[in-house]
Length: 301
Image (cartoon, rainbow, N blue to C red):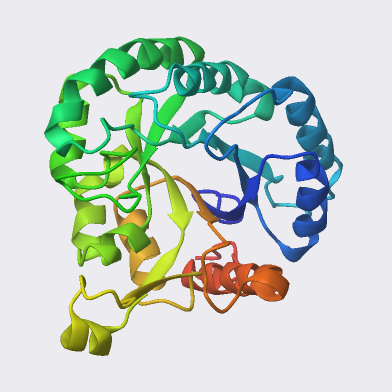
């Protein structure tokens, strides 16, 4: 076993003209992996050029003996593939481009028929993702659906059904493919008052990628105003500043033999943002590395 080669810790970087340069500046802080996110649309991005630029930066970074080189863990797009042919093409392009980035995970939203209850989208989800899953299988790529409610509920929402176990089970039934799984994070479950750890124990075998994002529930606000009183009752937080015990979370993953990357999803924390964005992300990296067990020491016993 190399230095924590089972669970690696990195961050999410938006796709733009400076992506490779941002990664170059982050690498000395110790980030091990990078997810590249294209937001709602890949647009006219030069995927080959971006992949080459990123790979050059990663390959040039010096790695200590016994450590693994940094890599791209996943690439993702977060539009609505159920209603947007453009988003379907984005998924196709990213599946085809994954190998150039050196990764095997493409992530995004499962999509949703806007304004309708979750189950009404199951059939359309299957129509869209059966061919995408076949395409991914042929290229050795896994598809990971983020568990974000995207401000929706079971009854209505705009672009993602993959935020609750009932929907996951239906999705796995609609697309019976070994490449279909989840991009999971505790934040979105805490928003729904779900205990993340029992859920993680049940579904870790279908989780391909984890977002390092947490949440803090303002219980005094909930007790006074409820969750529909027009008062903010929860904050999305950077790991180390929220309610999740990431030591228990990582221990749960290891007890179940999980392998993969936890990539910090920044740009949400109400405190560590703007001028403090990188400060907060590096603090989260240090925290998650401690939760992972600290410095790796080869076993002498």
